[in-house]
Image (cartoon, rainbow, N blue to C red; front, side, top):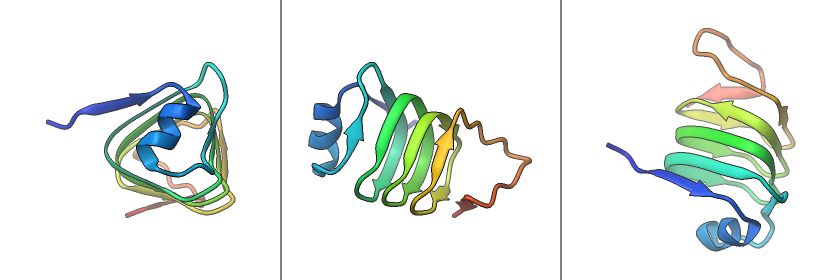
Length: 96
């Protein structure tokens, strides 16, 4: 069973991923399981829920977003109030 990691401040985000280019708005929460790989210059806003083994490309904005397992969010992507369903395919997300 994998452990869910919860980050609720920009300081925690920067320390966990060792990347000072990452940003998180106040009162935001990022939760994920297992390996999450992040590009640089990503902004997290609101409640962000990510599953296992996801990759987020550089210069993305994630705002109140929920994504399942094994996805790749391409660079310069904006996901706002986004919910990924297993049966739907989106051009901005590529299953790994």
